[in-house]
Amino acid sequence: MKPRPIVALAGGVGAARFLDGLARVLPPEQLFIIGNTGDDAEIHGLHVSPDLDTVMYTLGGLANPDRGWGIRGDTFRCLEALGRLGGETWFQLGDRDLATHLYRTERLRQGGALSQVTAEIAAALGVRSLIVPMSDHPVRTWVCTASGELEFQTYFVKRRARDTVAGIRFQGADEAAPAPGVIEAIGQAEAIIVCPSNPFISIGPILAVPGIRDALRQKRERIAAISPIVGGRALKGPAAHMMKSMKMQSSAAAVAQLYADFAGVFILDELDHKQADQVEALDLRAVITNTIMSGMRERKSLARAVVSALELAA
Amino acid sequence: MKPRPIVALAGGVGAARFLDGLARVLPPEQLFIIGNTGDDAEIHGLHVSPDLDTVMYTLGGLANPDRGWGIRGDTFRCLEALGRLGGETWFQLGDRDLATHLYRTERLRQGGALSQVTAEIAAALGVRSLIVPMSDHPVRTWVCTASGELEFQTYFVKRRARDTVAGIRFQGADEAAPAPGVIEAIGQAEAIIVCPSNPFISIGPILAVPGIRDALRQKRERIAAISPIVGGRALKGPAAHMMKSMKMQSSAAAVAQLYADFAGVFILDELDHKQADQVEALDLRAVITNTIMSGMRERKSLARAVVSALELAA
Image: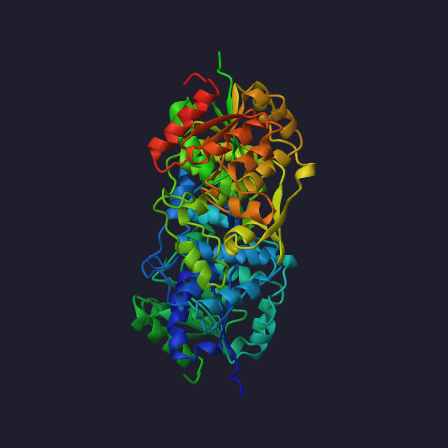
């Protein structure tokens, strides 16, 4: 009998590192990863899916270990040449990485669905887990700042996430449908894990696709979310800064509150053990462990802690 | 007073090498190069203009001296990665070369005309001559073979020009208009040079754009064509093979016949001096010189011979 899927909601680097551990603790074929596509962008006419790629490259063993994104040992000759032609170069596209975007863009133009094209790329890269975009329809994250509303990659990469964020909008989300298999996987899931990703810009777009949050609410007792905030800071990216500028406390407990309607378990770092009571007051079971993934050992031990919190057979 | 232009009709490698010499013998700013776009192709969704690029890269000092096409020292990491994804890799796109195609494709999608985008790229590469596509409209060369009609790059690169050619068709030519400035440049030209390019697939598409051949006929006495056939063989590419399979003699004189209605001077190699009478019988003035461009010295000396045959001030 085919085992019931373990579903993960994933953003970029933080999620990829956690999933890299999880795929070594559980059978990788059992993982059904729902990836954020709100930060997809058209760069030089190519369809770039940064979060899907980060997860694929990491699980395929190709990721750049220092930066987390892009391909290890990649070169940037095309980008340098584009710069000489007067093209924009703030979005770092490596030469090997470009192949992914060229392939994806061509297949999408031929009429392929993003979920299908993603499966093709992941298979070619030797990824054994299923990586599925949250939707085959375009959903685009816009960030409302004092300088006006910015496309996500403009806010995040070009302007280095320095603008004060007043709000976030997921363009197209209302008309989007979950990608094929997403709702079914959630329904059948043995457990569901919300990866340690930015709750606004990584997990937020996934939850904004109609039907996904409702489906999750049916599985509350089987859902564990991992805090991306440790000691008041984001492990990676602008989550803490965003929380503050949106007048929230930048704490693990504040993240727990964002997920309390659909998650039953909340994993927070040892550093934040004092917040366990706040978390439990939200009717979430608090699980305290080391969540800082300095290396493979920590990735795996966090994965084991989550597996154990969800009482999964590893 | 601005000097009257010297116009050149150009294909790929042979033309580029000749023009490289010519731009060192005449002021490069005086050259108005009309480039073939019949062999343009969409490769991985990118608009590739092989002949324009070969001329640009050569005049910009970037060309690969051995192959003639592509960029010197370019790497092929993106192409290798595309191959791993299952993409087609028969069309060799270097990493730096890719930047040209990405830039061009994006600018065309934004609504830029090919002539405008070509001028932008050439300027960025430091090319001082004007390189203008024969038309801003798509004209596509199809090759009729025993295996059916093939897109030009499929015939030329993928199948290595091995098919027997029964005929050639320039799709879109009838509806195409010469690019802005082309007819004017021909009209004002002090002289016009048909580069040593394949008469069917390099010069043929240019002549097929309505208005160009008629404009050339008005300037017959100021037009010199250089034979791409030496000793019955093409210096580069499949010209001789094509001539034979189309039941023509593969000789310099046979090329002269193809151009006799609009060219007044025909430059042929010393090896073919016995064909001078045949050429002159076509009412073309035959000029005999060494046309084999082994190195820069020969490129320049061929350029000087052409300049002298046309009685231009160098």
